[in-house]
Length: 78
Image 1 (tube, one colour):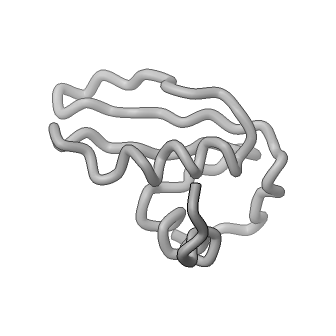
Image 2: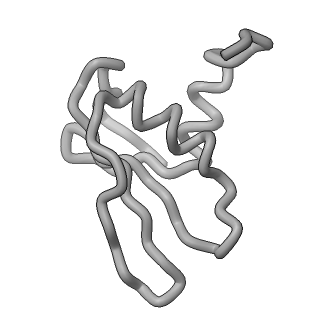
């Protein structure tokens, strides 16, 4: 996934889910950081649904979020 602009952590974002049947629903509206935390807790989905975040006109899938934000959870307790 090639991105021109990376979102700021406080940028407005929405987490979406697409079911295996093709139904797309917004799940969570928050900051990019907040949506990323929820996405990481929900991934991988048990039913095969697809999760992604939309922010600043771009889509960020679960693999991108995991790869780029991995350092946020280096053993820090929640």
